[in-house]
Amino acid sequence: MRGFLALISSLTLLTTAASAQDAATNYPNRPIKIVVSVPAGGGVDTVTRMVADGLRKKLGQPVVVENHAGAGGNVGADYVFKSEPDGYTLLASQPSPITVNPLLYKQLSFDPTKFEPVAIMTKIANVLLVRPDFPAKDVKEFIAYCKANPGKVNYASQGIGTTSHLTAALFEKVAGVKLVHVPYKGTAPALNDIIASHVDMIFMELASAIRLHQAGKARILAVATKERLPSLKDIPTFAEAGVPNFESGTWNAITAPPNTPPAIVAKLNKAINEVLQEPELQDHFSKLTLQAASGSPAEAKAFITQETRTWGDVIKAAQIPAH
Image (cartoon, rainbow, N blue to C red):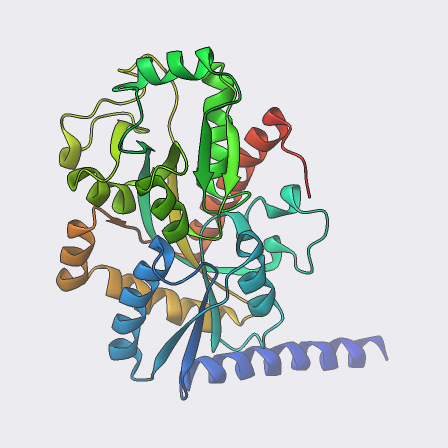
């Protein structure tokens, strides 16, 4: 009897594996939807639409991009988490909804660790961007101003738990300053208020910040990288400005609902990597100072796990309360 049950179990597993492989062979045979967890116009949205256009050509099916923004990316993440794990609904997000949001929200209706990582699309450095009329001209002056006006300097972020929020929390700790957090629902509204001088500063990804800096609508005081950036050779690193070991970057990832068949994840990963390596897209990314990423689903999973650990430690050290 036991042998018979073991045989049935083995046959079931083989049938399931064969079915999953068949699904990947025929995939995709209808439109794919990519849900972006931020409003239209932000960095994740821009990158996703470029990649989606490449996937459409590569896979031979329409790839529709929808914005489901809100609650630090949780709205979009929840939608995808509860979708069918068939490869036809994917999540494009900033780090927070698939990394640290469980530490920042008392109740989540999804488990970020259960998503199936497909690929990291881009990585990009963060910079300190201040309003155009902020009195400090460099980081040393900025820190001195913050210390002379404790609790009066405010900073924007794309929302609670975003890299811009957590980078500012880390900066408060290492620089010994006290700032006031003003969370926004995405990149565009936050930058609009920086330009209008309604808020003082933001830690922002280079792609969004550099155009404002070059146009004189805001000013970059430092870059959160080990070395100066080729596109901003006259802007110092934080280490050069007197804040050692202060580095921060952000990234955009594609993930799939829990239990999406590995064969479908692998097929998507291969297509996305090919799109990211295309000269036309590389040229677009270069103009936006974006760095295309690549790698296997396993490498994406390891990267996301490490980022969760790194920024989780920041949240705990800064005692950022869940809400």
